[in-house]
Image (tube, rainbow, N blue to C red):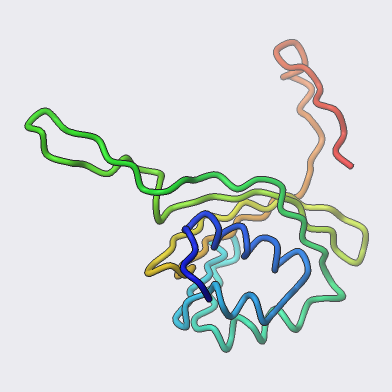
Length: 148
């Protein structure tokens, strides 16, 4: 793989996940990739297990990633003129989208992605099912349009 920016690596990851392109995924993920699901307490360790798990669900879910947030490293001069990295950039990205399951349910997904040496080394994934708005909030909110 040619030298890509970290953002390009993350964009390739989201594209490959949407198409379940396992070959491209092996190019953008570190061999020691770790993905965590804090809500269920699960952790997938290593590229071999990670790829095997992806093969287990193509007919079960349809991921659609909608937004990647992050940029290349940016540096600022501190009060003593020392350089400091601006947090939330460079190796750290986040992405959100939706996953459609075979039963027709669509859930939201957010992933915190950390890169190391030009590959994705850590993913922390959060999943959330839609839920009805609480009646008590009605005076304070406006209803967002339904997502397709």
